[in-house]
Length: 259
Image 1 (cartoon, rainbow, N blue to C red):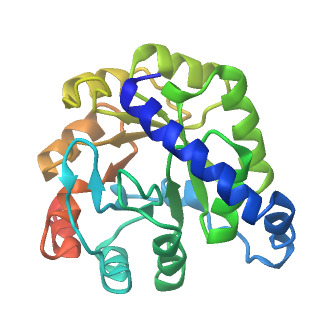
Image 2 (image 1 turned 135 degrees about the vertical axis):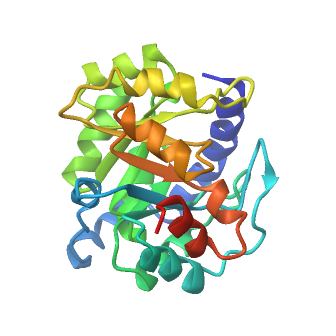
């Protein structure tokens, strides 16, 4: 596991155990029957046109604070109106300044599907995601063994959650494809150096079979970037920093979609 992931996960494990003591799994499971159905995350990425997963992100380890305060009730509907197919909501609080509250608020603010963006390694986190209002979760190949990936993927699907599977390297991509990944995100960011390369991401996207949904992640700054990745086979695009740095994220999304 890359050092940055190891640092984030180690901090998370301590906090997760504390949370589990306060709110045992059975308490979360008891809420499942009362929850509304999940929204169709995969279907939203199969619709015609450029499919953008717009990310609500306050900060990152590599960039620091990006948008100190996100007015969820304003920004989320603005992105939905601009044409976002789905929203990605950061819930990791220590390094990305995300929160459970942001996910719950986004659920009330928009009708499009929501991805819980976090560093998931435990079924408890997937239960949380479902209870908090997510329609999909992220599983990162770099921090999971094939067995762990399969178990978490199966559990998420049992709760009717879609799974965005993320790869950074050819080896990670092969693992995801060999173990049932259908919605494949390719992150252009190198987890060791934090450098980004759309060219390298494009090479991985070209390896994803036609029947899968290839999602280009990170470093998309312009409509031209989006078009180039689409030509290489990307079916959808996860865009965070470029939108969050804009005064009006919805207008920026329209610009990226050439509206």
